[in-house]
Length: 149
Image 1 (tube, helix red, strand yellow):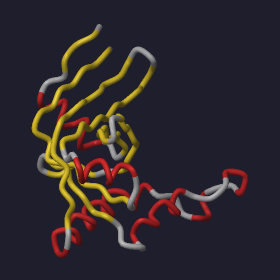
Image 2 (tube, rainbow, N blue to C red; image 1 turned 90 degrees about the vertical axis):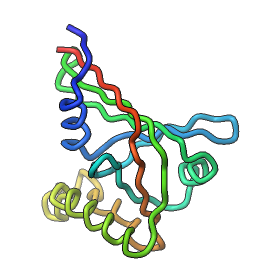
Image 3 (cartoon, rainbow, N blue to C red; image 1 turned 180 degrees about the horizontal axis):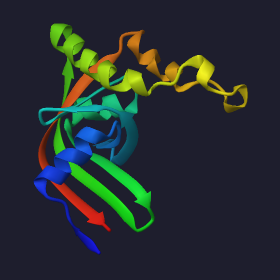
């Protein structure tokens, strides 16, 4: 059965996940990229380095954010939201980064929890903490959700 998620279900999907996708446009192209995030009071908070996503979002801060949960091929929930990107600086960026790290760090496996055949651990991804990370938030202004059960 297909259906629409309630507002409460939409908020639950956004707050209970940490991987989503940002859709942005620039140079006549559409770009969709996965990101780690934390959802806080209507905002998606994330961090990144300089690259195509930031280049596009600086020129056109209107973007789309998508999260989905797949339990089985016919049992899923998906949220699509539209919002406005904003870079954070100073104390505001520090506070946002604290929220992000508090949510993500318990999910990062330790170096010893991986077999060597699995390659480097995902903790290497946190490298955006150094080298001038860009901390941002997206104010979600419109949200829509669907499901199949």
